[in-house]
Length: 157
Image: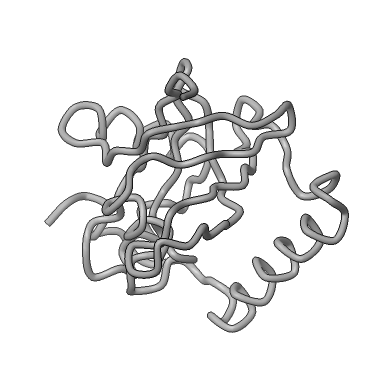
């Protein structure tokens, strides 16, 4: 069992509240035409981006707002689903169709996603730990290892 699963789970608000907050966040972003709801990461604070994936079953475009930090040209997020048990739909979509679009404060980018493994995962998880001291405890709530998702920029078509 990994270190992240041995830590004691810190308090989280109820699941319905977490889902409500993210729904409101997405709604504010949509209603303001994208002017509100995205921000850049700082040294010890994650930023937010809007990820648009292709649905694995429907083939339709699906969007979600995610937390991230920068790792050189790459952006890094966690497939945590609000620390719920199931994998987030956006991550399942990226596993089926790894090419996606992200919207940042300064514009749109095309990216290709992959799960970090081995030393890369350890290094990126340690960086998340610097941002969120409770990450190991939160990850302990999940039955499986939380994927560290790397979004690599790709050239346009």
